[in-house]
Length: 593
Image 1 (tube, rainbow, N blue to C red):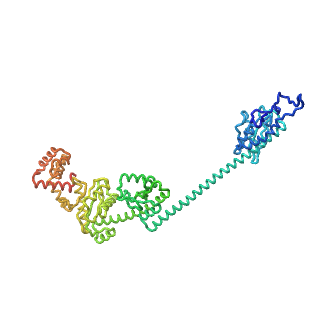
Image 2 (cartoon, helix red, strand yellow):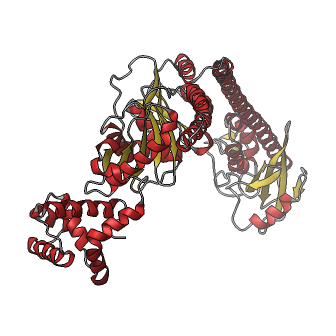
Image 3 (cartoon, rainbow, N blue to C red):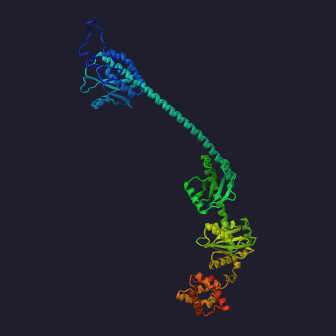
């Protein structure tokens, strides 16, 4: 007969009286016709024989829930018992297992949760006997097993149930110990991993600190030695192994350290370079653009240039970025210092130019100019520069100074309300300064006036007036943009500011007075038409085109000019005086105003 302990039964094998069913109920034959028979084993005998198998099953299970389930499944084999509920201690509280019987949960729960490790009776409807059995082990209380019976169990059945409870508690203790051992092992493994991670971080930190110290020491040595831009780039090259370059605010190369320097260095695209600067500045750190790591040199928010490493993407690591950032800080201090020195020198230069334009002591002028490296003993020219749409501010003065240096024109620079003034060594090239400024400003709408030569400082004030005269004549001519030399003014040279304006006004009134008055009364432009006619050399088509009128309209206006003024345009003397009068009217007296 198969054992109830081994079958994981859900129906109790013993009957309500605790005996096994053999044949008809109530009959326990011990004899037969053939003679005495051996007594059949009782359920208690069978349970005691199967107890080792149940014990092995309990101790083989490693999960507390599985052990509790096995115990509840085999309770019925110990007697007329039924497992009503099982509880395990979790987090200091009793938690019911999934085998709790329906309908009894609340009552049983309330009873068990109020216990403190004692075995106490419990009442379950329909059952005459009930008990909450504590599962004590070496590790303390592990849970409870709630068992009921329809009849009162015998002493042997009590013993079997108590044995099963002790085995269950012992198995739970072993399982708890194994679980804690596993948890401890996992915790130990975690702690070892953390220790290894911390060790790696510590090693990395030591390496980082060592590299950072090397960067700081290298750049500090450069600063202590008074090294400039070249020394900083050389130190950065030695720290990283990559070529290092510095560009100015406009993308032009200032210095290059290391191999691979392009020759010639490519000309920057001003629009794209400005866009690049804005993007790098917004990032707040080095930015990769193609094969370069770029950092903007920007002390106090003003962009002074760019420091960059030529580094392939896979070769540049965090150490490279760190070195670049700190070198950019050192470069910002260096360029800021150079900027400050340049501003001081520029201010002193301008004070010298202002004194030269106003007239100053020659000995003082020679000594001061020599301190700036400017040779006043050479022939000097005064240059006046005015650009449409550009105020004569500090930025434009620097632009003009930079352009003069680019075309090989050593100069002292200052500025006035609407133009910039240069005192230059040697005769300027006819168009080089104008063309360079047109590229720098992005527009050709500028005018430059150049004085006659000057061989002593005391002649510079007069030459300044000549430069202004050349500038004014150019501005009022048909081709108002470009460079005009005072030596090329011809007739306009005698119309300088040294002449009496009263006489000039009288001359203009004599020859153009009637036309000026007529234009004033009728809002016409006969004087301007006559001036443009002379500027075009008497060419009808060119004059009409410059005035944006039809040729027949031009003929009509010229006829009206003859009638109103009483002068004959075909007469050589009249024509000469009228042309000079229109020039004086336009250049000296301000034209239509």
